[in-house]
Amino acid sequence: MDNPTWLSLDRAAGDLEGQLYRALRDHILAGGIAAGQPLPATRALAAALGVGRSTVVGAYDRLKAEGYVEGRAGSATRVAGLAPPLLEGWGPARPPASSFAPEPVSSGMLVPGVPDVEDFPHAAWARCLAARGRALRVHDLGYDDVCGLPMLRQAVLDHVAVTRGVVAKAGQVLIVPSTRAAIDLLGRLLLPPQGGREAVAWIEEPGYSAAQGLLRRAGAQLVPVACDEAGIDLAKAGGPAPRLIYVTPSHQYPTGVTMSLQRRLALLDFARSQGVLVLEDDYDSEFQYGSRPIAALQGIDRGEVVAYLGTFSKVLAPGLRVAYLIVPPRLLPQVAVEQRLRGLAVPVHIQAALADFMREGRLRAYLRRMTVRYAERMAATVAALERHCGAWLQVASGSGGLQLAAWFRDPGIDDRAVARLLNAEGYGLKPMSDLFLGPPRPGLLFGIARVRPDEIDRVARRIGSLFDEACHRRAV
Image (cartoon, rainbow, N blue to C red; front, side, top):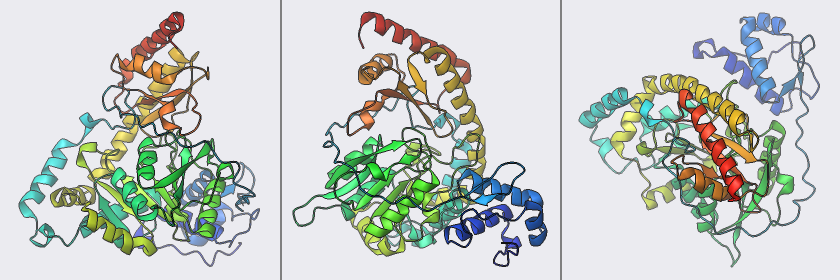
């Protein structure tokens, strides 16, 4: 690769670092650069392309962070070995799924997965909403755009293409009221029983309880697949091949881990070979602390097997009731018809106002501001819990998102009883056992979005004292 003649950058489009990163990534995935082969020296490539060396260094750093290349200071940057591991077997079948459907907790300082609506940009949003309420076109008030206003579909695509590396066309973007509506739509389309046999869906273990319930109600036999520090491990799946696999690869819910590149490629390879749809729920990956967010799985899908799901409920406010689903072209006609038949539409004035809000750059500015604030709150929460509850809890790193996983060091603890004890004081915690279909691992899920750094130390101290009191009373 001494002469990168296949590389070309569009200077008029901007983001030269991103262009270079994507070009190198795609060339690596296509096999154009073999494993172990060195990339050009950063100075040489910068000179050949006529860009600053920092542009090349930044692109290489992104490739290294996502596992495409490897290297150390003073040595060449080389392409990593990316061949997906062969799945020799799917392992033994797992226990049958539980029918337990916990009630969601929606209030409390530490409720997980809920943004801080006090920081919502009320004035800017009110201006966009008022302007669109006065000036909607007659065409926009009809039934023609059930799948979403074209201006919002394009604005969403522009946003996720830049921030998440999604590759699609605006027509593949469907605007829906919620992520739950999108999961239910795809589940009912793809998972009805056939020939008297239930369809199989694989889902992360532990995982999102709402997705578990929705897919089961759609007619699926759920197979929980264990997640570890590298994400979902398909080699530990059991039973027959699935029709759908639900994953949260960029920020696994609830553990917070990022799926490794090897696991991503193995998942895509398996889905292509078996004709499976992968549902990628990218629920809060805009918020990453300490590093650049890992690109979406959809962006490296070359087999049209990934449907991508995002939401504004976690980014802005749940009350907006706006999410989006980006489907492969082969499924678009079926999904669009299903959406129309079920009336899954978002009010047109909300859509138009949100499109304006995004095109004016207000969403980007809000995300930058809130990422800094949430990072401070996450760091303060991790430090306080380790300081006052470390004897009880193994706390995750808190590298991103709006929630923080913490596992009990004693596997015999009843985390549901502990959560009831703590939530009686208004904290809003979720027990980890609610997120397992098979045998659970006890822990607690903490929300960080509403935390105030000057208060969390006192709260963590109180939680630690409640643990001690509960232990002495042998309540847990």
